[in-house]
Image (cartoon, rainbow, N blue to C red; front, side, top):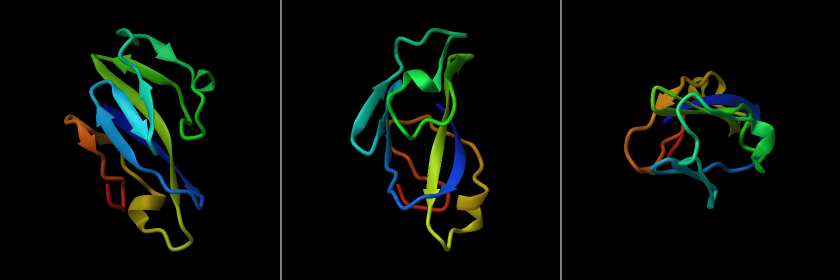
Length: 99
């Protein structure tokens, strides 16, 4: 799973957990196991404020773009986050933060 982030000054907490082809965001699970190779699910079809781009499967890997909230004193890693590859199930450590 490849996660891209769009940083934004936002006072909400974000918690991510990878569960196979599903992503749990703040306790809500989004299952993308039915998304086939080369297919794209528009962000507008996902009922969540956290998705800021389409979800697609490229070379067997899910690609997702998510909002990355940060506070007023955000670190450089939070303001300019690098994409991350998540290969194992479990909590996901966010750029500049804790899992």
